[in-house]
Image 1 (cartoon, rainbow, N blue to C red):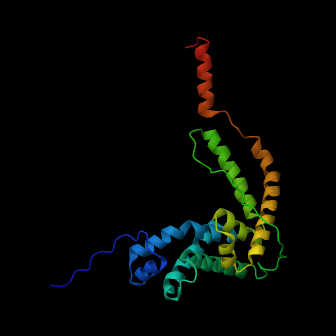
Image 2: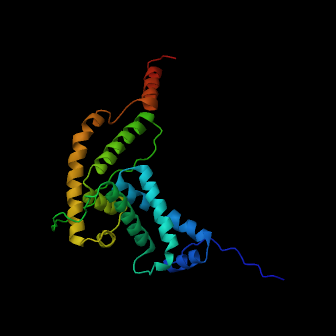
Image 3: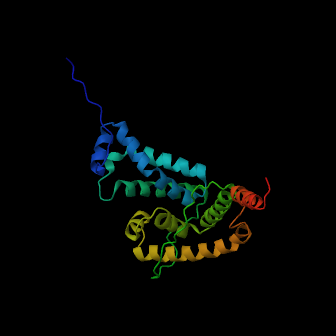
Length: 229
């Protein structure tokens, strides 16, 4: 009787080397696992460089095609996610340079300022439509301010803050010195803070909304206490 190959199980807890070996063996489950694990990071990195949703998606797709086509070149000197991140950044920068040939990300002065990570509040869904709308407006202000950061600072900000990579990993991916990463993050934070403060004025007028369900609930409570039906 011909032998039957057992289906491969979902790759849970496998090392990078094991995942790569399975992909090289044409294991679709492993391919899907790698894509799912890296989609958000790669999209954010590409989006941070290109500032365009559609182009960022194109870059991520191209990254996977290139990576899986040349997966035998992965040597494991860095993590698989770092390797994919580097491909994404190079692809995004390449696309940017084709549109704007004068783009250069490594010509800014270096320094030794330490940087802290900005902690943004999570935008959670709320049952109050007005509160949700205010949160979305603030989120749009922050996203717009990030988009307006000069490219060298924006890339470092996206890598360090949005994706939470450490200084060493960011330096490795971007080909920078750790001191440069710290300096650029520090300056990105300062520019972002100033930009948000300029834009937040009109939005802040809508902060702490008291409408929708909360307003109705309080109104009904007062009417009840006053003896209205």
